[in-house]
Image (cartoon, rainbow, N blue to C red; front, side, top):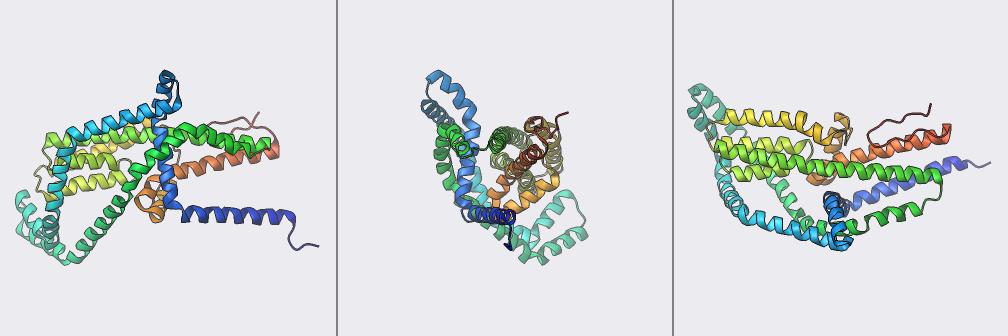
Amino acid sequence: MSLIDARTSRVLFTVLLFALGFGFLYIARHTLIAFLFAVFFAYLVDPAVSRVEKLVRGRGRAIGVIYLLLLVLLITFFFFVGPKIARQGQRLSESLPKLLETVSSGQIAEQIGKEQGWSVHTRVQLSALLASHRDDLLGLAQRIGLRVADVAKEAWLLIVVPILAAFFLKDGRAFGEVLLSFIHSRPQREFMEGVLGDLNQMLAQFIRAQLTLAAFSFVAYIAFLEVAGVPYALVLGTAGGILEFIPVVGPLVAAAVIFGVALLMSYPHWLILLIFLGAWRMVQDYVISPRIMGQTMELHPLAAIFGVLAGGEIAGVLGIYLSIPIMASLRIVWRRWRLYAEKKRFGPLNEYSFGSEITPRT
C-alpha cells in the first residue's frame, strides 16, 4: 500500500509548481515589470491603432503611424511647456536645501507665525518642537531623496516599454491563441478563454481610466495653481498629474507635496489651497472616478490597501502602481475558477462577464 495516494501526489505537485512559479516571478520581477508596463501601454494605444489600421490596411503601418503621432505630440509639448517646467524645477531644486534647513531649525515656524499672526508663545513652542526633531526631519528628507533616486533609475522603461509594446500590439492576439493551443480539454479551454477575455476587458478599462483621471488632475492642478499664484505651479501641477497614476498613495503624496511646497515658500493663501486640494480629492474620488472607472476593479478597499502595501514592499513605487490591476487579475482568476469548479460538480452554469456574479442556471 502506497503511503501517498495519487490525488495527494497531484496536489503536492501542483503546490510545488505554484511555489516555483511565484519564486520565479519574484526573482525576475524587475524584468516582468517592464513587460507589464509594455502591456499597459499597448492597451492604451490599441484603440487608436485599430482605427488607423482600417485606413492604412496594415497593423505594422498603423503602429508606426500612431508612434509617430505620439512622438510629435511629445516633442510639441516639451517644446512649448518643457522649458518653463525645467526652469521652475531647477529653481525649486536649488532652493530645497535652504528650505530644509529652515524647517529643521524651526525658523519656518517663526516665519509663518508672524505672517499668520500667531502668538509669540505658539511660535516659540512650534520652533522648539521642530528643532528637537531635526535629525528625524533630515532622515525623512534623505529617505525621500533615495526614493526619488530609485524612481529615476527606472527611466530606462521610457525607452524599453514602447519597443516591447509594439510587439504586443502587433502579435498580441497570436500570443493568446498559442497559449490556448496547449489546452485540449474543453472545460479547461473555456476557463482559460474566460480568464483571458476578462483580463483583456479589465486592463483596457483600467489603463484608459487612469490616463483620463491623470489628465483631469493635470489640468485642474495647473489651472488652479496658476490662477491662485502658487509658486512653481507648472512643476507642482505636472507632478500632481503624474502621481495620479499611482493608486491610493499617489494622490495623497501629490496633495502633500503641493501644500508643503506652498507652505515652505510662504504662500499667503494656504487655507484656500488646502480647501481646493480637499475638494478636488472628493470630486475625483466620488464623482469623476466612479463614472470613469465604473466597475472596472471591483476590489474591496481592504484588498486594495493590502495590494498597495505589498506592492510597495516587493517593487517600490512600480509595485504600488501595479498592485491594483494585479489584485483585480487574481480576483478574475478566482471567480473563473469557481465557475469552472461548479461546472465540474453540477453541470453547466450561465456564463458571466467581467463585472457580474456567478449565477446558476435555473
